[in-house]
Length: 448
Image 1 (tube, rainbow, N blue to C red):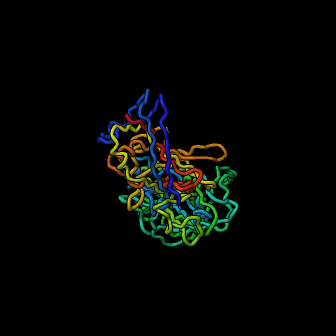
Image 2 (image 1 turned 45 degrees about the vertical axis):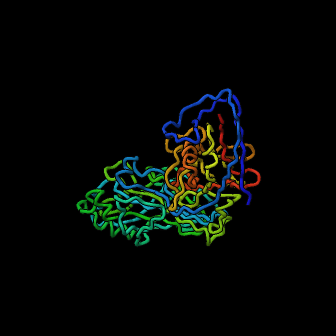
Image 3 (image 1 turned 120 degrees about the horizontal axis):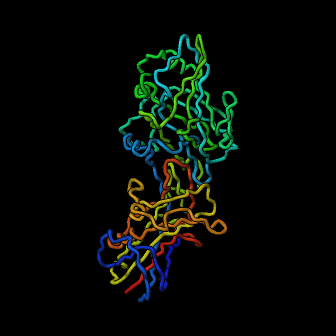
């Protein structure tokens, strides 16, 4: 395939709001970030650099850090995803929810001879992804192994589950339609899943006498009732986004006893002394279901015409640059700014609003490059809309390029979503060997 070679010429008398870099002598990265007014430039030059891009799998992404650090970040916030979808470009993606739940009020007393009439799990819609005209099914299982507070969790985590305690089969999702519940109360769009009343009868009503030790606190509860796993039970449909922190997201046990009818609530609340842990898990199938890319046959030498980026631990676009030894040996070469432009593909399923660049390691995307880690400029990885759908992403890499040229080479870089574990975005990009709009490594420089 064709290698991209781009040439860019620095213009006279312009102001660059970007760092200036001197090649052929080591410079401390602390000097990066200064502004320079360039006037009366001499020795104008251009350069030609190769950019190779291809698609590589990302096996798993971080979805929750350990409990204490997560609390410092504000709790377990953001959308949680459940469902499955088959995409002609990306194959099949499946998402599920793993979560603890806590009492709205501890020490519930179900009274004399309680009978569980019904139990319903309410999940407040936040968004959706896929075809909501297709029916889908979700199942709910009890967790039989607790969620460890000292652990960080990744999207490939496999929960240990027991009984199926709820399901909603062959339903049409309505993520934009308000619903009416008890006593004609209208609430924001919410999915209601019927739960197994007999399970909650034995686990809650039969033992909840106001003095049951496991109900004395929410700390005790998450030991006794370890949580739920909401998973897809259909092959193709939608991936639904739910806001668990919305007060409409809750589990309600409706019961009656010898004297009254009442309710007991379990919630996902993040404002209690015990904060329930929750996160999404994912799986991607690029082989059983057809895709437009073959991960085992990516041209890592010449690059691909089209590359792909997917969140939920899916795929990343890898950028590979040549060695910079020829630039490194040129005395008096000043690089004023460098950035990468990547146009989006012809058909974007649901492109990410923001992408970022990390170093690509043998185990997957690693640390952010310096330009993202220490403050972004105008080229911040946002999706920029162009004319007639000619959209593109622009990434500042000036600081990264400075270090790479000082070392004579750059590590491979990974283009990944900013939100890797809370969305189902899929982005198609034009590759370095695209014949019309390839990836561009743009370098502004002067030579003294």
